[in-house]
Length: 190
Image 1 (spheres, rainbow, N blue to C red):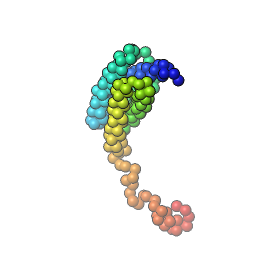
Image 2 (cartoon, rainbow, N blue to C red):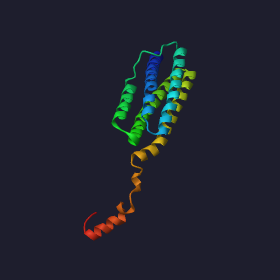
Image 3 (spheres, rainbow, N blue to C red):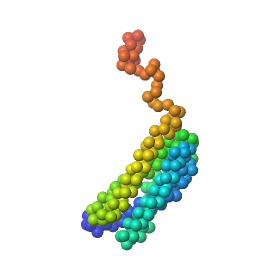
Image 4 (cartoon, rainbow, N blue to C red):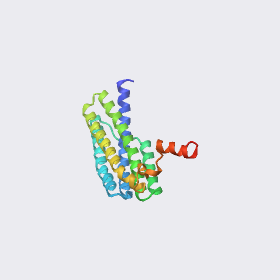
């Protein structure tokens, strides 16, 4: 791959991410409104403000490249946003919150992959200032994913009726000793 074709790919990928971020600016208020958990609602609102900053960083990069940011539709993000919207219609209460976190983490992982890629391209192209901006956004996306993981611990527990899988009663757990005892009592494998 020649340096020029890598630069073309880099710009094309930046346009894709720019469109993805703008789709999120429209989708995040809907997710916040649908969230029943106040903590999740806050997390979506906070990420909306952060996402607006990501759009501004990308605009700064396009300006330094002398390129326009528009002209590409991110089909991947479009699909992820559509899935999130469908979840709003399919679930309610704590299960809805768990579904929203699931959808949001898919988005974050998509963005982490995209920003990691363009940051690597920027490095290869010698665009150190752009690489720095892209890495800053990449770290913010990773932090958002970690926050969602933390929120999911309590929300998923609530969606499961407040019980963890490991909270079975001691009598219902088949330990090897109980299996041997049951085998001896019945004369067959338990």
